[in-house]
Image (cartoon, rainbow, N blue to C red; front, top):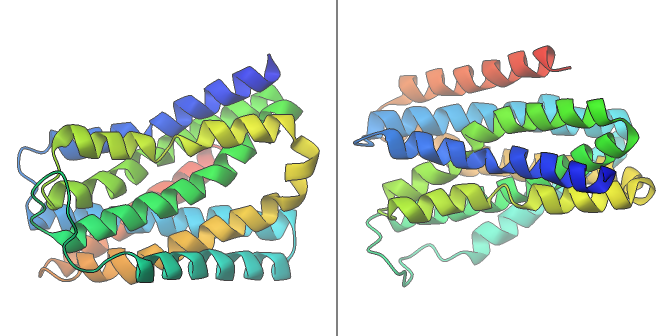
Length: 246
């Protein structure tokens, strides 16, 4: 029952990414000002999660060398994935008006899926150790998964993807969490040893996407101030949530 409850809690938290996709779908028209603000907001959220969340926790649970190695490995993986993804138009089942936006959406989906794995492990191991701790972790993760869904759905909508498709991508980015929670609850002892590295690994992947994709793109359409305001809003929101929920 403990294992099942941990997986269900993490599933609910993971599916909150779909709410973020719903926010993007709610805008009748996603003009560049709104798009850049949302990208800036997502960048702020991801920076806060990566630094004051994932990497700081990796240092706390492990040590500096493990955290450094994890960050470098996560960034290297996303760099390799970035190089592997085609930069030109690729055949899709819909008319893609902005191929680079599609690329950006795939990169964000990949980084957030990687990031959701240690989150799921945290919920699973936390719930197995203390159900109340697992519940608090799941609540915190669900809240910050909403802007992550915005980060995934925004670029896909900008490239012309149909609504049902980008909503499915947003929901899908959170599905790695319950699988990881199930494994974490079953193998608490084993995953306790690799959790610091996996946290830092996800943090490095997220920082790569923020620096290489989100910030440059959000500043490329003449709405730099809106993007910066979005970044600061996202960072401060996650900073406040991290204090409230701990």
